[in-house]
Length: 383
Length: 70
Image 1: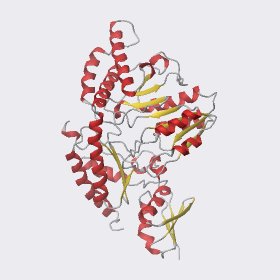
Image 2 (image 1 turned 60 degrees about the vertical axis):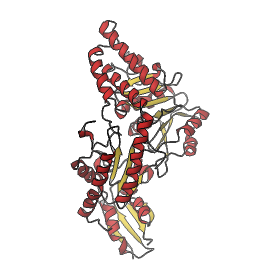
Image 3 (image 1 turned 180 degrees about the vertical axis):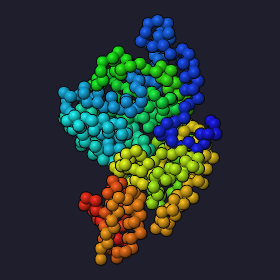
Image 4 (image 1 turned 120 degrees about the vertical axis):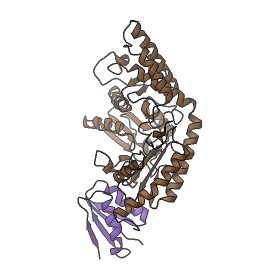
């Protein structure tokens, strides 16, 4: 991996493009530029590439090819998954249950449903960000049309008790949408779902490809205007070269998943231990063990998240933050709020295949003096 | 004696910083009230209490009460 990636620690937003994706993209740009819905030669070649990409991604996700719909992003997949399942489940009722720490795409769709007269209940989480399956199950009602739970949290890495929640949903006859965007290519794909959401740029595929998988027989219909795209499930054409690249990346990542996850998880263990040790007054977030292999999050007392991001960027490190001053909205991350965690001075690192032990060492050496200097600037030293 | 800190208009972490500077102004067992309108304060003030071993004594609108425990 090139040296310019050595300080890139935001793979939980976008992972660097996998080399296998780059190679597949170049080939597919030559062969897959035609419209796969057309019957002439260029269209048929694109169709073959698209069919193969769909079959490959379906296989990686534990789905059937005809269950997989390509969307322009994970966000679009989440929006349409939630709204489409609610639209198709109206005969059962208009109640939606989701965890309080779902991705904002799921919660935004829930808010839209609420504005349109639907009812929404959010299941609380503990201090690590984990939902209590009993509390989640208690929210399911006879008129619940959909339940939503992520495989693992995208901001703090905590793995959710998906199996227990899925069992409760099955028992209550409630369809379950699983947001697997944070874990795809990092953990084994979830086994039980009615709808599944993923995003290629988080597994090393290109930006511009999201996945919505709907189990055969699950209630779902498009809420967008009629169009023949994606068998009527998403309007417009799929960017075939991007889908091909996304499939190649996921295949490559899956082939090496367990070894790479173990390597990154050991780096995360080191980061968690040494940040807590070397930075005073820091709160390490998320479950230390039942977590994604690549995410580390922490909050530094008395430090503004934006200033911390700026100083880390100046030192060559790219990270993200859930602090309010570092987002365009002036509210802190809903995940940190739901956990009751310190929201200021927040940093999230997302590791990827290009992050080495030396990169982690460099970050661990850079962080303590930056935090100390920011505290001194606001007169917080010794408080 | 009770102390009231007006942090209206300040963004986090400034209200928490003010709280840390002035917690010693009250006796152990007494309350200090922080007035803060930054939405993050509702999470950060109870979190600070947890990390620093003080008691979060409740919120009323933009007013957050903290009891000094040590």
